[in-house]
Image (cartoon, rainbow, N blue to C red):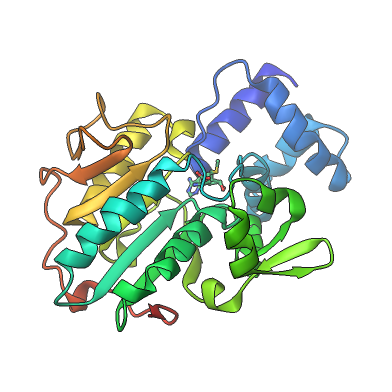
Length: 291
Ligand SMILES: C[S@@+](CC[C@H](N)C(=O)[O-])C[C@H]1O[C@@H](n2cnc3c(N)ncnc32)[C@H](O)[C@@H]1O
């Protein structure tokens, strides 16, 4: 790949998905985009770049999708889900006792293991949530991973990664070599395509946001911008959960870390309140779970 083509692709990916590639990632582009070029009948990356310059938005979308890293697994890193079950949800349930409504956003939910892990945790808390409305919204840039997430069908390998066996037996049905998550858990998660670079205020205000293992691909300016917009759509007593390699510290003061709970953050209030928080702020959604 010649240097101008590499620079062109770097800029295109940065502009469309936030992916911030260093100057030495030619191998990554080659390994992800060469198969895509060949499938489209193109000889090499150079021809793919010519096609992109021709302005095909479908090809841009394919290139952007092919460059996303979708690695995920059930109950990834375990601790955030322990926090979710043992401290975040109990605190939010107490604080929302009057309105009986909890909104959770799983930004960059990939193929569904993360939002369904949250849904299974919520299901396990049914006794405390009788009559509550709990919304879990899973979004991702990639349409392909969202389709897999909606289907909720996983290989033996995927269900063996992080999912306790009791949960597999309780919440999945086996179909040959595949496992499908049960319809009641699937129905608890709504899916939407969403690019974190774009405005997401239309999603409404959230109590809990899981935004894990996606900001690591972005540069500082993009992270700061996204943190600012996340803070503005969170309840003042809400929780932001980041990935193990991610933090707001040293980047922005719109969130403050919990000193005793790694990976958890709360809006500090400096980004501005999310407006008048109440039913009027919440968008109409079809499939929230009534528990
Ligand atoms: C490594 S996965 C993380 C999945 C899950 N959050 C976890 O921690 O297991 C990163 C996901 O971010 C998505 N992604 C990348 N850029 C994005 C963007 N600009 N907006 C929304 N999602 C994006 C990718 O498609 C991918 O599914």
